[in-house]
Amino acid sequence: MKWLLSILLLCSMCGATELCAQEAPAQDPKQESTAPWHSMPTTADDNAKRAKGVLQQAIQALGGDAYLNIHDREQQGKGYSLHHGRPTGPGTVFWSFSEFPDKERVELTKERDVTELFLGDKGYEITYKGVHPADEKDLTDYLRRRKFSLDVVLRTWMTDPNVVIIYEGNAIAAQHSSEKVTLIDSNNEAVTLYLDTYTHLPVKKTFEWRDPADRQKNLEEEIYENYKPIPGGVMAPMNVTRYFNGDMSNQRFFNSVTINQGLDPAMFDPNSGWDPNKPPKKK
Image (cartoon, rainbow, N blue to C red; front, top):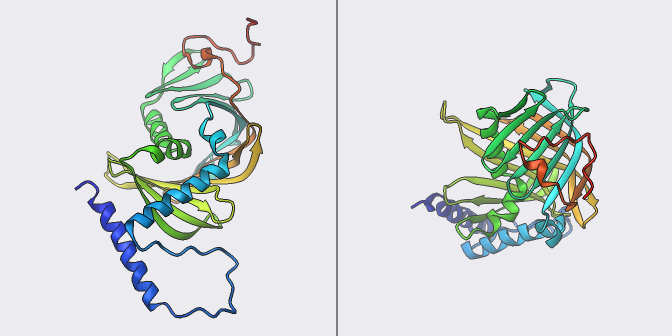
């Protein structure tokens, strides 16, 4: 029963495809489309194969095995918070260090004297005042975004046999001709990816969640732009924009991205006293 909604959706899509194929007028052979156009699969098996094929193309475009085997990542840039699409301040420089699947350290300000640390399902804020648990709402929001993050979807959801993957056809996303694929997990939580028709790189991701306070659904979207090759054979988006219920809520512009450099374990220990402004001790 828990897959009933997904199956009904897929069946209705396939039925609609057959009906459109019967009723669509013949195309003038002299007219050529400037964008590749992919017809909808007409069976559930073909749909699943097409969906997985499109996602595999995306993984290959991101770097293939090099992308799937990223162990750690360092990003440096500047971020902006927005409210109803308007900046709330001048922006903040940051350094982000992460180890897949569930460790991240974010150092804020030019002095790097404010740190947000996330380890598994726990979060901490580290300042000159010491170490304190992260704000409960901030931690909940972070854990939700991590669950639906692009890395987790392509590296974890993709390999889960309980996840239903549905090809939803052609779409325009972030001004890109794209193919749309939705993944639904065993809890009926869904995430939708839009993959560029030409490059196969992800250009947009969306997911919904219900607020436990007012029971209203919220829509979160993320746009990936300005992909660049980085050492290690991986493509990385240098601009990432997040939307909340249609309003721009956050922008990040990366100056540098590096992978698999090997991070000091002390960086992920909230009580280690790690100081980014001091050179590491020689072994």
